Length: 438
Ligand code: ARG
View 1 (cartoon, rainbow, N blue to C red):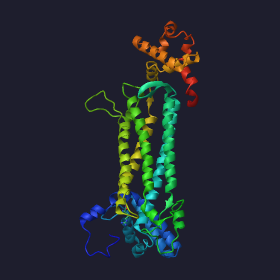
View 2 (view 1 turned 60 degrees about the vertical axis):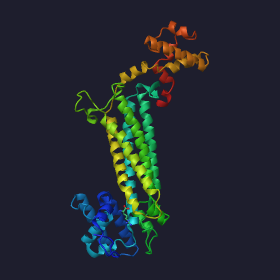
View 3 (view 1 turned 180 degrees about the vertical axis):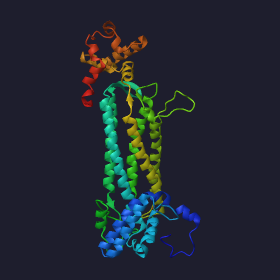
């Protein structure tokens, strides 16, 4: 079951075998490993290194293996060192001696590199697809809820905005996240197959052939680089980390807003849970878990950065440690996007409660100052007057717009009847940020 052994006198210990084996996790790469192997075998045939008959036996053997794996007739398990060993050994079992020719002009180092690039590209594009879907859900939610809400700084009510504008902030963040992932795909889109172990191969192979076959943009320029960098994985997880950071902020807001203290939204029952002791509880577990899983993705980033930082060129076995954190990060991100789509597409927005929070939050205090500025007062003085009005209102337990004109005049003779229209929330929005919100 080993791809090597000729130069060894002793058998590998069981302890070492278990320690070394990556099959339990790199079996995820079976599709890419088989596709990469087929491209390699076709190229060897094209270059006359394999005969037509040998090439087609290998390619069809690999096809039937892929079908059997996908049907569930061939399970990826056993005492194989990795997915590459599994595929090769099983191929030999299937097609006989000719299968032993597949690994001509190839090393597991360029093989694993090509598998990982293909897998990364595929998963990155799945992430992009899902972000598109998420953006559609956000813009629909925003469009359907153009209601006034308090905008916050320092988590203190600051100025009036709309729920739509608030949600579209996330739409824009996710738009950039998508571009970052696509940019990472653009950079990683190079074919390492043909780099061999580290120094290419003496066979007259055609790297452009496998490049076309596997739909890469170009072959890598440098063999050592091609087999020994994992920067594309690190870059992708960096993009995922930024995406998760955005997710975590949005989750935090959903959690706050669904508390009775805010009461701006209701998360659908399908995505909340109850308490085993407190009958009244409805907990926002979905966004809490998304916020929590952010740590896993950051962890994957730090893990792979640290694994790579001291490695001399070219391949080192340390690099096998890229897989578990990377696979976990990819799966986590995909699950979190799907969950966020589900939560947002069923979210109920409580228009009235947001409006009440606006009214009791003095969110038109800045406009009171602006009003006085329009009447000729310097902004700093106007700020002081508006501040005293807020203090007065707090003591009287009134909103600014509830003051009588006589009360306004106590603070400044510049106040006229038109103050009411000026500090009305709808008209504030019309004059101000509403312009960019449409
Ligand atoms: N399982 C290995 C990895 O993930 C595959 C490459 C093995 N190469 C080698 N020279 N042992 O990195």
